[in-house]
Length: 126
Image (cartoon, rainbow, N blue to C red; front, side, top):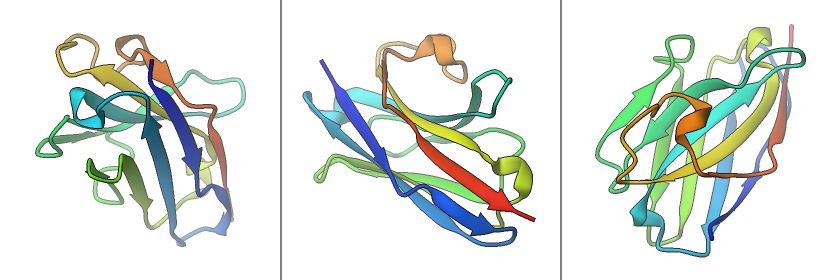
């Protein structure tokens, strides 16, 4: 089992920044690729970013490219999402997710991830 706990959400003005963190426990974190997803009220859970087990490869959703950066520190078992130039449309609950590195299907879809955190709210005011 893998446990994921997100932190760092909050209220920020448009143009501002937030840094989300996901603490990983239960298994060796490098055995899991990690992802961030977000879900706004009444909408589907959308892919934000992912990073492979070693941290050498990252993927971003089109709406966040150039503004968000995903990174990981396997020694500390932490995955972070640095969010800059935030927009009101970034408002959502943000979820951390993990999938075994051997899982290579649906890597930008929620169905491709095995473990989930409880989510953290990010609100961007205009």
